[in-house]
Length: 167
Image 1 (tube, rainbow, N blue to C red):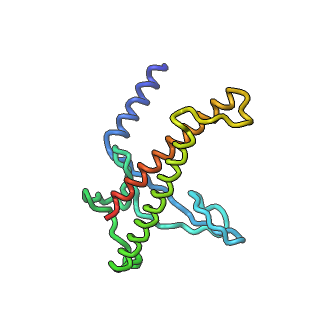
Image 2 (image 1 turned 45 degrees about the vertical axis):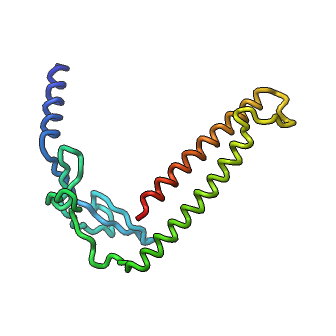
Image 3 (image 1 turned 135 degrees about the vertical axis):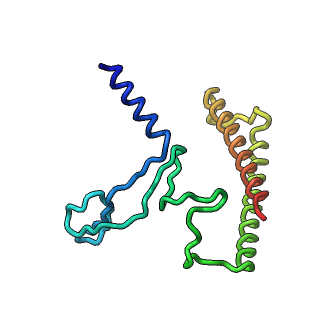
């Protein structure tokens, strides 16, 4: 009996993964007395209205396709909305320059922080502080300093990548 159910589940899984799955259900927009909007799959409460949505098809790759039409490779399925805000080239260049300057400032600060951390770290042998009579506390502080240095180095790498990605 158990093998029968295993076969049924296996066949169902193969059938689903072999082709596209069509996902469609009724959706209702419900607004309560306080004006709070909520989407539901049942319209059984007062103040609910059925919402018309385009069909959603999920292919075997797991990627949803809204509207049922296939997207052209390299292009989005839907175009840019006509009311989408547009920025002229001068404004965009000014924004890019501002972003570059901010990233360069952050990079400079992070490099300075790293230099200070390495100086304090003293090649793995920082000076002991007065409250570190216990050697374990000293080791914990050294480990924390090493983590801070590593984090700072990763931040510098990330900032350099961001700067390289700018046009």
